[in-house]
Image (tube, rainbow, N blue to C red; front, side, top):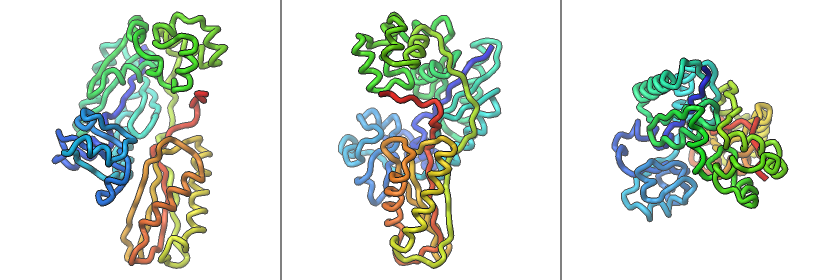
Length: 350
């Protein structure tokens, strides 16, 4: 039988930092968006479970996080390290799957052919053990007949768990959950459902499907089917694009950001062209400067939401480049976007 295993790396960025900084293990830790020096000026990019116990969460200003927990540990971001680790994870997962769909830097869905749920659970345990052994990282795995419900099962098994929900048990598993727990249901869709007096998935299952279709179009039909235990989502194999970058050596060494304005614009154009060509959106922007002594410096920043906007890329890149000019002239620059997701299949939740 065909089943889907949904893998989500637990607190991925924070867990990566715990691997190379064992002194963080067991302590509340956040990964911010700024350097150690400017840690109070950024926002939380990731928080481990110890930090979450204090009410700390992603997108929170780091200044507020330190107010909630005086013993909080801080790590600046290292996108290149996270991307390389993600690449190793996805390569490992591909060895277990008939088909793999990479959803983000730390999530993937695997389609497997197994005799039954018991065999799928064993496969999942082997995956967890190998990721832990090879990379030292925890993950959670959810197993079901389709990708959407497998992800919901995965969410319910966090942290560091594994869980399977068989087809006959899906409807019961879902019935008491809030509708916003369904992937793709955002605030506006939830408001439309609330207007129909639908608040939980059990209520969604009892709603006239034609009413849902009138309110939400084809997504209404999909929601009705999911609420009733039918998940038609499939694993669509994709190429694991971890980041997109462009670099260029300058014609003349630069001492200030004003001297590289034209090249920054050109690189941004090239990156955005590739992003749109591959139908992707990004949530992280990085820039690199290579100096005349051939040393490199990299700065990066996570955005509040996914985008494919050239203006957003350019604005953040210019801000980051300002921090890379100092005593040494720059001879080469680069721009990179990462934390990519596919636009294909994304829904407009108006």
